[in-house]
Image (cartoon, rainbow, N blue to C red; front, side):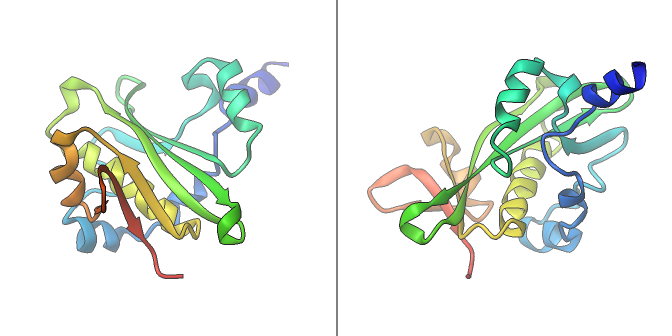
Length: 171
């Protein structure tokens, strides 16, 4: 009985093998970042959200939409605490023959971990995850003050909407 309960508590929102497939060289060449999901820094781990991280009912609701929610967390493994999170939501677009697009939301890093490029690591991870999932674009919305930060990571403004940024991938 305990094994079944434990397995239920440790179920990830998406298959962590997706993170293993991201090319660590792209983190360096595209983002000038010496961090990657496989190397986030001492005592840190990048992984999918799992059922034991948050309220189970909310997790189960998102899990009912397979291949839609790619909530990624950074865990401090020394204290077993999630210290950062970001979400890639993937949706099929009817007008694009059900091609998929990604949307990045909810990037948060705990105050005591800021300045270590972990936000940049999450954005890079979610963007490359979108590319791996064959999204034709990944977009986000942000405050005016954050536009320079996201444009430095390769996102571009859409004409007429200065807070909507996107990266398009070749099909």
